[in-house]
Length: 206
Image (cartoon, rainbow, N blue to C red; front, side, top):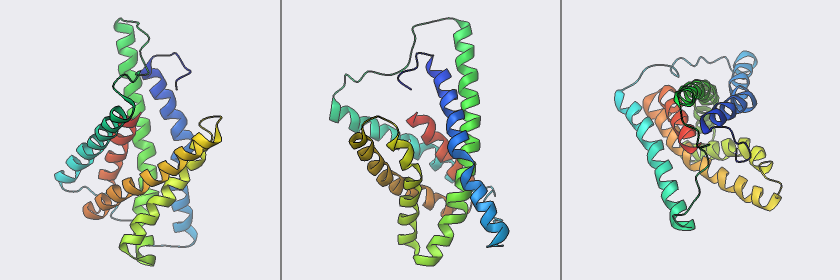
């Protein structure tokens, strides 16, 4: 991300496409395989519509978390944090390119988030809670979800200690986020709000 000098919107859509290609489809395929050959239980509730308040929570809560994280970063590192991004180029062509890139990125991230939520929150979470109990199941599913992403963070830099700390902290982050997304899925009886929350969170973090 930092080594590419393209406009931020272009980097966003390239990152979104790479992310979807590398991480987007496996949870959905894994769920399909397990349901096809092992567990024949239907997932009738996962894509149902739900109460508007859950969509509101799914939009506001991730933005609040991103804002909190930014505030903690400013307090920890000071206000003079350089922002990645602009090339200093102005013009309508750049604006149009930026808008189109962000729109494509949103679609790609939404598709990836839906595939992820069907696998992790739609199928895995309720069955893990049935096996080991509600609270342990909610926490453990977040830990496993974080471990799923840990290899990417291990390869993020050439320095293993730094990447290792990032991976461990991300597992903890996913455990906490898994609690929020898991509650949202269980309370709404749908993964549509969690997909929205996942999308907003990914865009905000990016």
